[in-house]
Length: 83
Image 1 (spheres, helix red, strand yellow):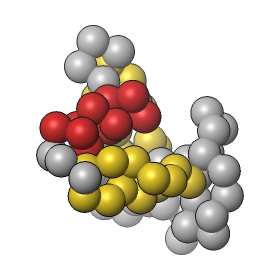
Image 2 (cartoon, rainbow, N blue to C red):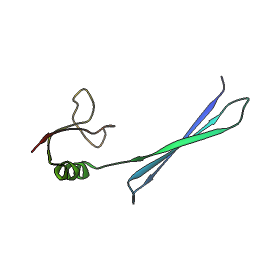
Image 3 (cartoon, rainbow, N blue to C red):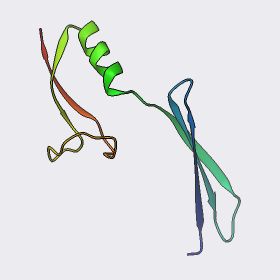
């Protein structure tokens, strides 16, 4: 319908937060904005958080199909057990 969607992402390396802003520009209406902030965790941080919670990491995946985790995967899926 001619609506334009703009997305801007800014990674703050000090706080490990990804700031995402969406701008929607419809052809016949006012411009709208929205967005969210996502806290990003490294695998090392997650291992420490799990340990602090009394859990032990048993597996790490990069997708729900069981693919290996790497710097190129979009997800970090962890499996842990109580120690």
